[in-house]
Length: 150
Image 1 (tube, rainbow, N blue to C red):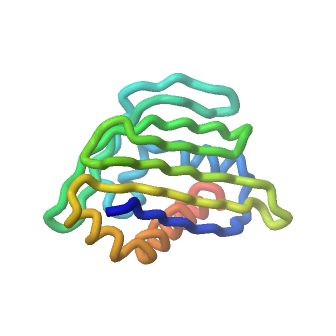
Image 2 (tube, rainbow, N blue to C red; image 1 turned 30 degrees about the vertical axis):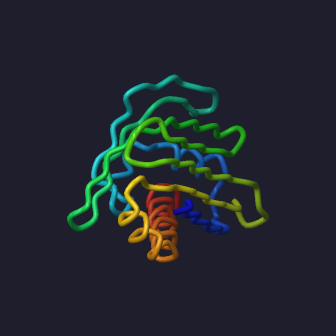
C-alpha cells in the first residue's frame, strides 16, 4: 500500500503570520479540528515571532477507530510555515506542512499531508475519503480563522 496525499489551497483575508500562529496553536485543535479528540504538547521550545518547536501527542477518533500518535511540530510565523513529522505511532509515515504567503487579498494558504498507516484496512478507509477529509480540515481552519481573526 502506498501513502495517501491530501492537498488544499485557499486565499484568506488575514495576515500570513496570524494564520501561521493559528495553525501552530495545536493545543486547541480538539476544539475545532474534525476527528481530533485530544492533543497534548509534551515538549516545547519557543522560537521568534510567536513560533515554537516541540513534540505533540494526538488522539484521532472516528466511529470505532481510535489512533494515538506523536509528532514533532515546527511553527515559524516569520517564514510562514508549520511543519509536522511523525515521531511514533501506528503509521509507517506522516508528514504535514502548511505554507502561508502574502497575497493581495490577505494570504495564500497551502495545506499538504502525506501518510501511510501500518494497518491496511485503516489506510484504505481513510484514503477512500481523502477529498472529503481535506475539505473538512481546511473548512475547520477557515472557520477558526474567522472566529479568531475576523
